[in-house]
Amino acid sequence: MGYSEVRLIGADGITDDEAAQTATLLHDLVSAGAALGWVEPPSPPEVHRLLESVASGIPSGDAALALATTATGEVTGVGYWRRYDRPTHRVNADLEKLAVSPAAQGEGLGRTLLTTLVAAALHQNIETLTLDLRGDNTRAAALYESAGFTRYGTLNAFVAVGDERYDKLLYSLDLRAAG
Image (cartoon, rainbow, N blue to C red; front, side, top):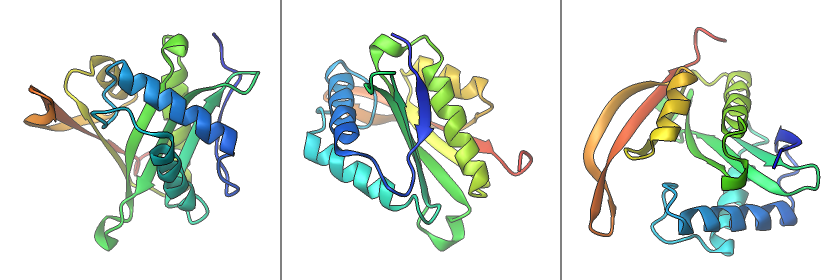
């Protein structure tokens, strides 16, 4: 498929077309069983609210949102982090989503989105970037580990999808030495 760019969304926010395409991407991924935090595919209004919420934190440095698009403007990947709300945790952020279209997987797009988000975290003086993922998401675990994230915990059988139970894996990346 090939992608032309991965870019951080600025203070202007995400366009309506990009939001609609991102909603379709996330809907399709969850429909196919992707472990993105939804049991049922999210509706377009739900994704729009989520993206607006993330984008509202961009001007203050409380969030970063990255999109991958093809030369024709097709959204092929998305990722974001948000700074923790609690005053004692504000120096840290949580990478909440990283998703890539199946047609673009295997091209390094997930890694490019991840490195873009890590660079944005460094720019905003984030000290530790955390994330969690479902235990059966081995490709994501391998990506995060290869990027320097350290697994610091497991919550056994924590994630329930119908009758299935999965471990929740907890990861962190200490950015203090890199800053």
